Image 1 (cartoon, helix red, strand yellow):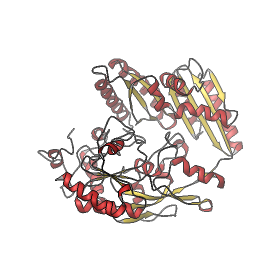
Image 2: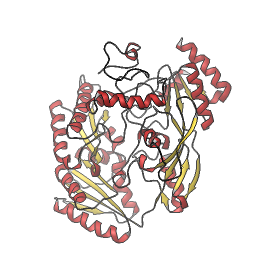
Image 3: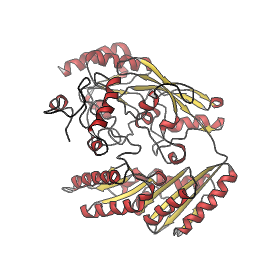
Image 4: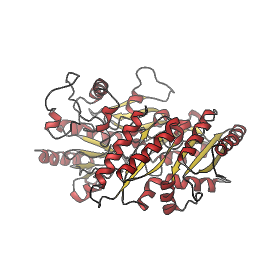
Length: 488
């Protein structure tokens, strides 16, 4: 029945959108079988490429009428399986909604479509003296719509915050297929914070079709240094000392020896030889303030045993410092055939202890871990390295990955900082939240999506049926029986 329904739906959408925008060829569908987390792969039943918000709404309405689930996808760079397709559903790809509608420097905002690439917003704003602050490592290819879905961060989130701090308003297609507006151009709209609820909801509350973003004035001065340390303990101590001194850098990034090895192999960034860890510290703002704080940062790095400090002399050298860090995830492929990108958060002061414990957990399982992360706000990105061709290594890597998340929670942190929960971390969510917490969250989801058609099976380990009485239920959940969810 599902196949016949999809075939009928494909024909209906072709009549509305045309053949080019509807894909049902099996070979072409496989292009969309995963996002940036390739461990999970599902071939969608149908892919649709709307060109406008109205077309996107038409697709959703057709899915609702047919009772077919749908998943939104941007550039496909997500790292939690958040855009993993549904095997019997429609994948709605927003990459062709890529117009920058307005850049309004006087209002310090821009209006863009969801398919616009993150870095393109800054390029459009720079001639006016502004830029867009959230800067994921994938900013050259990730899209604003995906950033909104995952509440993406980036290296400069320490000072400037995450995507949620830079979204003023949204036009969204609701899970019923209606086009509505949330928020607006004002700095803070009255009433419930529906924009805040939508940003980071991972496509479960609807699809963004237009985003009004906040622009930030280009700083008068930017100074960047790279400090090398013998150990991650020393680099972590330097990070805490900098923040404790009242300095809030634009970014404080750390890489350990294994991450440095991978970056050198990939992009030849020329970091100091023999470093057990490096810090990249960037300050921006008024020149006088930056110069005073930069002197203090340099002093604190030396006081915490930095054996070499390099100061970027110009933009080219600054870019070289950042090249190794920005390429780190992909670079790990040079030293390991397979790896898991993890994303947990801990209190910044716990960095030395948690990094030591990660090393111990890795040694116990015979698995290597490369650490590269946002040290300033304790957002870890352990890269768990393994070889799937070696029997049992993938299972040990997955076990270690989960143990790292448990460690983050034990220290009062979180199972995710900026990559989202998606498919990958749903089973870990109950380690942070009670049953009542999860029920309350799902009641909000049901208010937006009573049919549970928008990106089903994501975030929550066992999705509730809208209309259920909250609380623990006995027996098999209907979604479990249907094979759409697991009980962990």
